[in-house]
Length: 429
Image 1 (tube, rainbow, N blue to C red):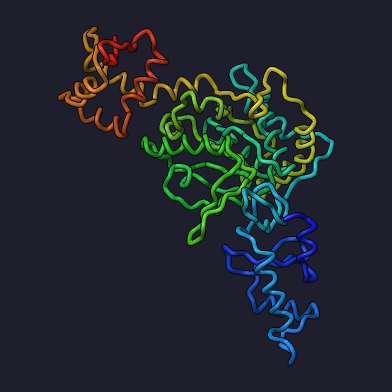
Image 2 (tube, rainbow, N blue to C red):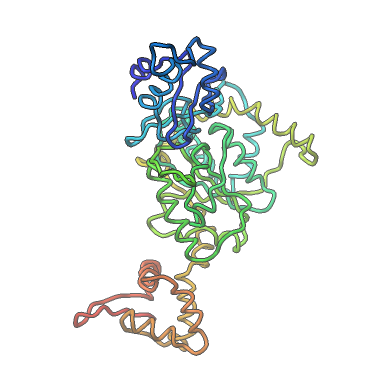
C-alpha cells in the first residue's frame, strides 16, 4: 500500500488498521506506536472522534460500524507487531502487508570520544599480536547500517569464544543497543527444537549466550542449515502458534558467545566449505574493565558510562571505511576465523572422529583399505570393539559419503578416490 493509498483510505483522526492474524484493531497512540484494542474500545474512540455509534432511522448501520467495516476490508494487514529494523507503519513484504507497531530505539550518532569502549574492544580483540578489530568494526558497521536504513542485507554470524568473565556478554549488550535496543533468544528454534519463531521478528539482535549446548549431530546440522539461511536470505518465514505463516524481511544479526572449552565449542556446526564465508569466529581475551562492576550500583554506573559513549562510537562506525583488502562483495566485510579455534573445531569434528576410529580398526598396524563406501561401512560397523561407536557416528543418510568427502578434501595424502569397472573405490592409508 502506497503512502497515498494509506492517506486516502484513512477516515479516522488517528491511523487505524485491522490485523487478520491478531483478529483485532490497531490504532496509533501519542508515542507513534500502534496498540491493539478491542472492538468495544475502538467504538469509544470513534465516538470521541465524532462518529455516531447508534444507527440513525434512515441508516442500516451506524457511522462507527461502517468505518470499522471499511477498515477491515481496506486497511487489513497480514502481520502486526514489531519488525526488526523498521519504523512503525506499513511495510510490504513478498505480497504480505505488515503493520509494524513499534520502531527500534536507534541511537543518533554524535562526534566525540569513546575511551571506555575503545579500551574494552582493544583488550578483547587484540589476540596473540593479531588485531581482529577491523573485522569486528566492519561487521558492526554493516549491521548498524542495515538497521538505520531499514534495508536487510547479508551479514555473517558473529561468534565470540574466550575465557569466562572476559566481557563477551558485555560486547553483545553493546551490539544490542547499537542495533536498536532489542534482543531475542533464538537457540531452540535454530537447532530445530521448535518451529515457532514469531517472537524473534521484533528484535534486531538474535543472541545466543549461556545456553546449555546441544552436541548431537542432528542439532548441529540444523544449526548449520539455519546459519546459512539467516546470513544470506533476507526473506524469512514468521510462524507463530495458531497463526498462518507469513514471509517478512527482518533486519537481523546473530551473535554467539561461549567459553573456549571444547565442550562449549562443539555446539557450533562443522565449519565446512559452505559455512566458511558465513561465520566470524573471534577468539577474545579477558578485558581489563576500567570501572568496577562488583555491585548492582557499580554495574549501573559502568553501563551508564558505556551508554554515554555509544553516540560517539556509532559516529566512528559510520565514518570508518572498511580496508580495501577486507571488502567482500556479498557481506561488505570479509569473514574471519581464528586459526586456533578452527583447528580445535576440526579435531572435534565428526569426520575426524571417523578417521581416529578407522586408525584404531581397519588401519591398525600400518594397514591400508580399498573398497566401496558400502564395504567400508560394513567393515567398520561390524567391528567387535568399536562397531557401536561407528553406528552412532553414522546416524543420518549419506553420513559416510559426507565424512569421507570432507576427509578427502582435508587429507588428500591419506584419502583418495577412483573409479574402476563402474565402481567407486576409496583408498585409505
